[in-house]
Image (cartoon, rainbow, N blue to C red; front, side):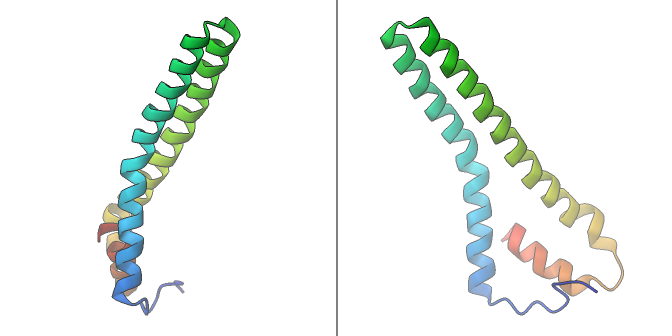
Length: 103
């Protein structure tokens, strides 16, 4: 039995969740670049080798976190749109999930 067996979410909620999903997909890479640049600029202006090394480590951690976030969302989208769309007795659940992911 599926949790979303009957899609009782109002269209406004699925629309908001869909927009939030799209915003996360766009803002994660932009945030990584902006915050990484700010850290590198601050470390370079300070001319402190320890600060530069710390900013590189922070940037790598942010990059890994961003990649994990992006790929988890991409894999979930791929699963819902590709693999699970042919499952029997899941059409209403799939319709509901695709409305949230696809808009």
